[in-house]
Length: 285
Image (cartoon, rainbow, N blue to C red; front, side, top):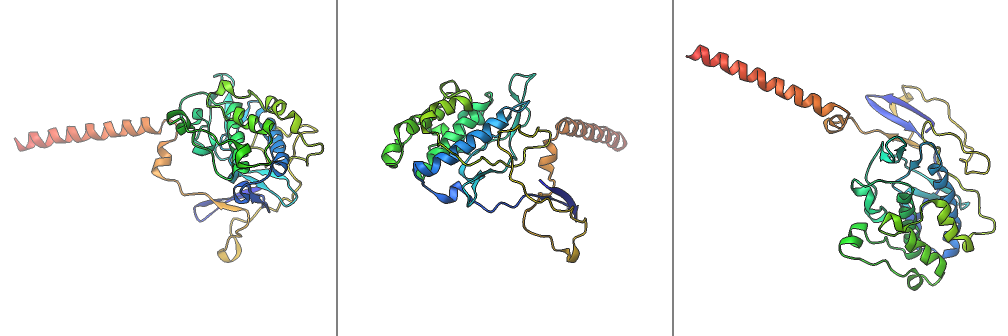
């Protein structure tokens, strides 16, 4: 995010313009095409998970991953990312539900989420890029025992090590998955490209330290000057600007303590109404 400003009671974010296509729009790809993207994503997610506290992306899917014409990966939309609270042993500070086809079971319940949540989503994303179709939802895999397709039969370019790695990453039980991105690398050690292009990530959320040398860094882009509060002609530039939705009553109720205040005011109104009713009854009698 380069800048933010407010105009006519609406808020706007100025963000980096990315000239790229999403993995979702590219459809099915060969293993040779997918592997460089996969190893870039491993770098990106490993960097996020190594923050203090760790950042779990939680919504990794083909539509949030962009590929530039140079073959570099851009991870976008950190809107529902969460941070792990070290004091509460992994309980969620910020929580939201991801996309059903690309999210593990623990994303939709009260179970603990950790790095293995992103590992499942990464496996599901690779499954999509090699298969051309999304995998069955985690709920269907548990309740209806919906099976994963054998990627080697769907896509002849897929090797056995990659097919096995995807199945391991998409295990329904978190304990059956690799515990970290480092363990995922071990599964893919024989497939690592000799010279993968440098990974590219979106700017980290506020408060996250810059990555050390040798770790993925954002591409250098010119930072625009701060936009004026009043835009000439009343027309807002479209590129890179996303209007924020207006505040609604439902959003206000989600604020901490909002429901307690609502209950208190409701009881107060009922009490006043009851007392007023008693006064009217006495006058009528």
